[in-house]
Image 1 (cartoon, helix red, strand yellow):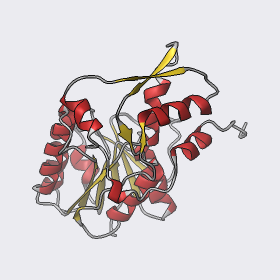
Image 2 (tube, helix red, strand yellow; image 1 turned 30 degrees about the horizontal axis):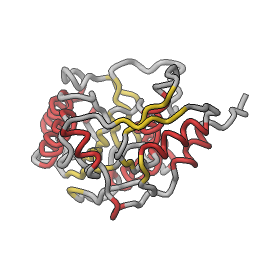
Image 3 (tube, one colour; image 1 turned 90 degrees about the vertical axis):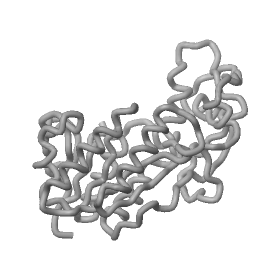
Length: 263
């Protein structure tokens, strides 16, 4: 590898994990952010910091210049994902190099009818037709997102859970490790999906989250209507044949909720 690996969304949950693992492997690393680097941002000091806005394209030409690979973790959570990816690939095509574009995606976006999933599917197609060497990795939901479904209900007297829905959460560090391996190797196109080690119903994860934080609530299953939730109940978000993750949800919770002894 002749140039650094650029990480878009490098200050987010997944992006930070990718940056840490790139640096641990001795790879030159560049973080793209819309804002100048704050003094207390907590990101590894050996990473180069560049300022640019994927929404407008401002500063992106300079950010991609000289890179050997780009790990595209930035996401808006809506339809704008397509445009920010187009702005990124256009900037790369204007540059002299042809870095390997690695994109993170979601298991089930072609099976579960959801507006954001449609945007992710269109983004995948854009990456695949960009003219760049490319790899796309789909994963199941991260542990922290599944836990958030319960944590967000702290003020409720009961804990609502999705009846008939199963999840297969995966550890963010394991996904980051796979992205780093892809970015530092040859382009593979659509990589093998990654799913977590456990497939359990939503109530299992709700109870585990409550238990780990010392909360006692009655767990109440709800079955929202609509095509999206029907697709989830049919398992459209699962990859049982790709349960390659190692860290269980309970192990994640134990690590997350462990007392801070660093102070």
